[in-house]
Length: 105
Image 1 (tube, helix red, strand yellow):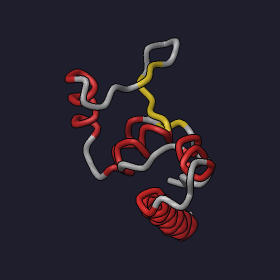
Image 2 (tube, rainbow, N blue to C red):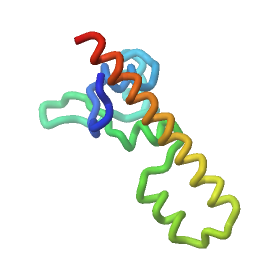
Image 3 (cartoon, one colour):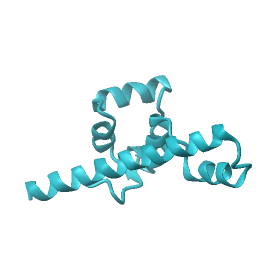
Image 4 (cartoon, rainbow, N blue to C red):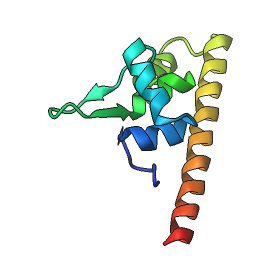
């Protein structure tokens, strides 16, 4: 699965990304733990923002608000560092998926 430019995920791909089963995603959807979005034909899908929320990473617009606020606040600087660390983790994971995908072709 190449996740480098994906913004919407099928349940199978999203489950793989999170390290859970599709059945778990379905249960979380029913329980309201992680609600799936639905297509007009009622198929489940998930977004990149949902992935970030699941991982505890704030979406980009929140990061920009943090940056434009008083940057001298040490806690905000720490939050930015955490977000950048998560972004690096995602980038590394995407590289790994691309390598695996190209070897399998």
